[in-house]
Image (cartoon, rainbow, N blue to C red):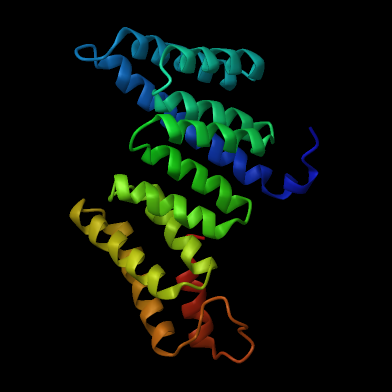
Length: 228
């Protein structure tokens, strides 16, 4: 298939795919380590995902896809298999198939926060911001402290000029960073929140034309955009 219209986002998608692969490996390893209470089918699926991600890392996409499809056949409710298979399709530029895999996983895996977050990132990269926001919101409904979903939701709200929602999300990130004693993240979130408060007070949307702004307001707008 020919995916020239998506060439602009391939580099960022490749970085995102690598990050997703690391997450999949961690989740699969966690499932393999839970011997007690874990079904034989789930253990087999976790091992096949491990093999599939190893094949993908070596550049053998065909073998990776086979292993991941086998994993899903063993346990259709095993979330990491869908994440890995969708990431494999994203890596090759087949975003339609990647989205189909995410949709299938979301139908079969209960409370699949990681699936919503991953599909949201894909949709955000494709410029489908409202759909992306819906996915991030769904992920947070299952896992309220999902850092990736929060960061991406904040950036998506800013891109949509939904500043009150962006401010609420930034404050949520601020509180979570403080709770986990992450001083750097807390400082960044607090600075973003303050910038957004000023912009909202002046009714000055972040994405509006900046030609009539003074240097302070332009600086605040740039600061509020961080994380996009």
